[in-house]
Image 1 (spheres, rainbow, N blue to C red):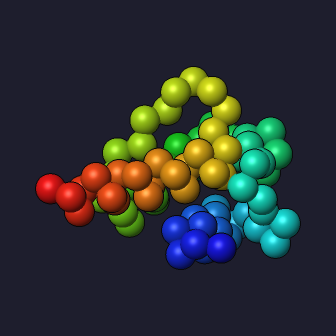
Image 2 (cartoon, rainbow, N blue to C red):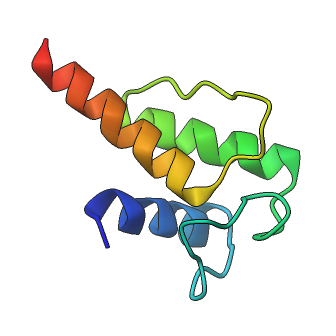
Length: 81
């Protein structure tokens, strides 16, 4: 489990009060974890603030793994500059 994954779990648990004990990487935030569109936007806000990245929504349901990969990719790109 990566540090980014644990960080997203912490944000979900502390900021959005979402139980994350059974969170898995393939789960979708809305249909599987039960986040409303407002809660998903709040999650993205907290992640963007913490990591200083911009997360682009693609219109597809966002999975935990999608978000983790996006954060890690943007952090890698940022450190290469």
